[in-house]
Each structure stands twice: as C-alpha cells, then as structure tokens.
Amino acid sequence: MIFNKGKPKHKSMNPRRRWRKLLTALMVVISMAFAPAAMADLNGYDISNWQCGIDTATVPADFVIVGTTWGSGGVYGGCLSNGVNTDANRQLAGAINSGKETGVYHYARGGDPEAEARFFVDNVRGYVRKSVLILDWEAQDNKAWGDKQWPRRWAREVKRLTGVNPIIYTMDSGYWQVAGMEKELDCGIWIAQYATNLVTGYQTAPWNIGARGEVMRQYTSNGSLSGWSGRLDLNKFRGDRTAWRKYANPDDKGTTSLPNVKPKPQPTTAPAVDLNALATRTIRGDFGNDPARRQALGGNYAAVMRIVNSRLAGSSGNVSGATGGAYCVVVGSGDTMSAIASRSGRTPASAWNVPSGNINRIWPGQRVCYGGSTASSVGARVTGTSHVVTAGESLWAIYGASGWQAAAQRNGLHTPYTIHPGQVLR
Image 1 (tube, rainbow, N blue to C red):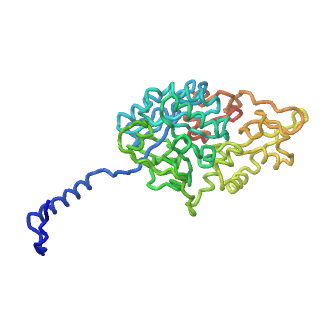
Image 2 (image 1 turned 30 degrees about the vertical axis):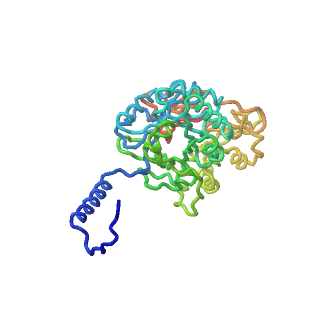
Image 3 (image 1 turned 90 degrees about the vertical axis):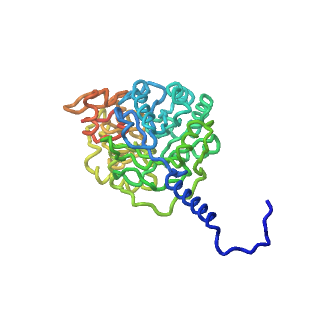
C-alpha cells in the first residue's frame, strides 16, 4: 500500500472511522465481561472411605478427589473392602455427571511400591487419562514413611503402566521425602498444611499457598460445605481446568497453563496458630506418635506438647499394678513413652516393654511395663460399655453400619476415623 505523506494531518477523525473505532472498543469490553478468566484457580475437596454416601453432584466444587485404594488389599473400614473403596464409582459418577473435574488417589501402606502401584492402576483403569492419578503419602499406617525412594518407585511404576505422571500428596513436614520429584519425574506436589483447626469454607488465598511451589494445597480438614453435614478436606488447585486435564492426560491438546513449580521462600509472617486446637487433635491421636507427631506439628511441637501434658497431668499413665515384678501403666490419649518414663521416674524409655515392640508405636488403652515380665498385647475384650480394639478391626466391623458413625462421634474421632489395636472405645 502507498501512503500519501504529502497531505497534512487532520485535527479530527473521519466520522465513519470514529464510529468503527468506538464499535470495536465496545465489542472488546463486552467480550471481556462475558469471557471466563484464563487462570482461575480451582476449589475442591477430597474424600476417603469415611465419606460413604456423600452426594458429590450437589456438594459444591470445581473438582472432587476420591480415595480408591489402600495398600495392596486386606484393608477394611467404612466403604473399604479388601483395600478398595466400594463407593468410589458412585462418588466419581456424581462428580463427573455434574461437570466437576476428578482425581483418584491411592493411600500408601508401605508395602512393595510396585505391587501397590499395580493394585491402584488395576482398580482405576476406567479413569486413567480422565482423572488425575495421585499418591497419598502419609505417616499414618505407612511402614515405609521416611523412605524417599518408596514414592519415587511407586510413581515410576504408575507412569510405566499408564503413561501418566501422578501427583504426590504429603504433609508439609514430610515434603523433604518427595522434594525433587517435580523435576526428576515431572510429578506435581500436593501439600497439606493448616494454619488453624477452625471451621471454614473455601478460601481465596490459603495460608502459605505456593510456598513449596506445589500445584495444590490442602488447607483444612475442618471444611464446611452445603450438602454434607460432616467435615471435609478443602483444597485449592493452582491452575485452571485446562491445567487440571493436562495432569490427568499429558497428551491433552488444549492450551495448558501449569503453575510455577519453583519453590518460593516461606513467608516471614503467618496467621496465629490455634495451639489449643492442635493440642486437642494431638490428644485425639490425629498426629500419631513420635516421630510422626513431631514432624506433623513442626515448630509448634514443644508448645503443643506443653498444653497436652498439662491437660493430661494426673489423668494418664494410671498405675495398673505390678505384673511379674514389672511396673505397668495404661497408656493415655496423647501419651508418649518418653513422657511416661519421665513421669514415672523410670528411664530410659527404651527400657520399657510395649505390645508392638516399638516404643514409638503405642496407643491409648495399652498396658506398657518397666522391668519384670514382658508386656503382652491387650486382647479383644469388652469391659462394661468399652471395647478394646484388636488388629484388623474397624469402627464398621465393631459397631455395624447403623452404629459406627455414632461411635466415632462418641469417641471424638474425625476423618479419617483411624483406630488402633489396644485403643479403648466407649
């Protein structure tokens, strides 16, 4: 095109051109008003075998993550039968049919990682490349906790079987075990870290979000959403639906917008932590025993344990009498062997006999002894209205379908409603 540079500049625009320009600007404004945000983060919740019956179609969320398998079989409780969530298909169908994104997770039990990966994939084949694949890597009931190679081996086997890189879930204090998997295996990281234990709905900017460069953050286990009377784990995914689907299916041809996975520095300030709420959860057994408890509480460990010990002073470690020359006590809620040894003046803690043979694995209701004959495991028994849990039992098995939820409430148990051998239930 040849431009006529000889003409002088006009002070006013041609009326027809001015109207075209105004119309173009108006169209841009209208399109921006109605177009969805390109990088809207997603809100969602995850459910385990203890949310049997939840209507995922009506409980509000952008995504729902369902626990599908535990270990490599042989685990029961709630909706679980032989390690498989029997309600998972219904839960996932409700989410999918109502337009929600979905994820499926495997709860690690610390057995052979390749065997657990195969068990998971065999049971979720219908959802591969449709739902995000996830490993739940926690200390509870996980005999391989602390083994950094276990989640890596599991992830490699899942990738070999499906062609999909899974996301790895862990608590913030356990991040050191999976750190580096982002680059090594192209796995997204999902971090759990709670500022308080207060009841909350979805949050716009959860505490510490992005501090680990994670793709997703679980910021409460005390979430409250319409359509479900119980409490839920609430999460924020740092990306849009296109990014979610890319994690589910790496061959997705849509335009991806993955979050930045470079770790960011921890913030210098944080909301006040509810130490009393953490102490209540510690006594309830939510964080297990040391060293898992110390890892879960992190920098709050000392302050929380001072509150726990103050509350339990004079109420735990009751002397149950000498047995074969041994000094024995009954473990109270929130107790540790180091606390019992210190309180009784019988140290070191390693000199005590405990039913599991491991002083870091004790549960309320067990008898532990110092000196004399070796402590024996507490067998199944009912004393008045109490029941002492034995290996392999679940609330479902003990109280039945009509009574397990009432028993959980009566004993102050909350999701995931874990009980342990030797624990006394009312």
